[in-house]
Image (tube, rainbow, N blue to C red):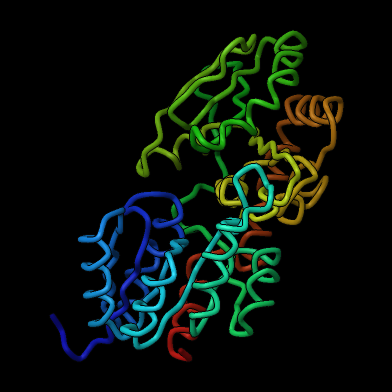
Length: 331
């Protein structure tokens, strides 16, 4: 262990979930170049794991808690042993997952936010919620490593096929489910469409052909870059307003035109009729996808503009690494 380096301990729910990878893991190399040693500790349930966490926290210069909330005793002890404490979150974890209020979740959330020296929030909705409790709240949007993604030159996997791509998880598949009537109508209107799902499931009772691509970190970039149109269906409720638009950022980084609902952060990331389409309702979804399917030049132009927007709006790894280093220096 290099004793000249400052030690940052990241406490996370898991070691390979999307939040851990995108809110912590991808920054390790850049932050370590600035004189930090970073350890990511996945904390499960049980007293032994809690004691391990608290012992590690006592040895760190800064403890970054990623989305995790605790009971009053664990929070009190963590605050006691941590020299500096940061709380980072990228979901509306103070609510039930259906968007309804949850007094228990809010109490746990407010407890860790109040105890922290800094709070990093993934979007403005989350920052506003935390900022009412802790004035040391900073907006830290989720970002992607733009260098990993291809900006142009998309090729069809099969001649004549137009792939509509969606990337996500089984837990967020419920948003894709809402698009089934649209996808079925598109299948009847044009036989060239195929739904590419980068996840561990398929849609049932779908008339459109499907291509399931089991997710891996190595394959996700290729899976996106070989599609033609990216889709990001989203319902509008307090829970989804806490989403940080990761899939939209991935689509933009890959140079894909994006079609999304007028909901949550997605509608602020996509520039309507410039980098894609912001739609509301069944008919608008169909017309937007059909327009993109009929015009390859429009797809390329919108995809290129989307990647430019990603870079100009600083949703990039390099920019966020610099910002994170500055905030760690302040704490």
